[in-house]
Length: 284
Image (cartoon, rainbow, N blue to C red; front, side):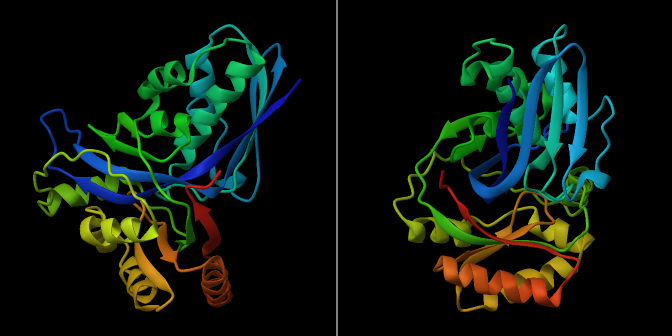
């Protein structure tokens, strides 16, 4: 018996980041929705633990012991084996939680094939040592994250049409946070309760009001992001646009799915090396 689990892209629609704490971590709060685009994890019982990577971004990722998929497997169970296949469709170091979502999907898949009967909450707690983004990816539902990203609270959010755009270059999260600190950014923010977005208008207002505090350092490291965001925001079919996570993937909320497809096709036609997808957020 094999199990195949979707590992959706994680999109930070808003992201407020405070100054670094004494331990070096940054407090944050963020509204997170999951996209219809993502990777896939397939798992089958086996005597040993193995990992094969396929898909368009397979060559960008190693299958060594430090791969998050294998780390997640060993964290869940030290003695059992499985043949794992990662179909890598999401670009690497792109701010949409690809590695974290892969790790979360691995935990979900192995929990099933190994018959461990761990609850989703148990898997989320176990996953925290793999990275602050992994617990929210275990839940795979719209959420408000706080603390250093480790506190996950479900939130109400509508389905949204979106264009996801990555300029074909990786942008390492540590580099963005380092530049964030060098620029002396990170105002102390008031902790807010999870929002309840009744419709797309609520989401758009939040994106415009709070944005992404990592946008300025990301743009300083990759200036073309500034041009991309300016172009997206100037398009009348776009309701709001911002950076997801630490980048370099940007998103644009559109009025309709047809608008998302049209914008994606135009961007893809002009930029062959870019990763561009028309997708949805917050929909099963």
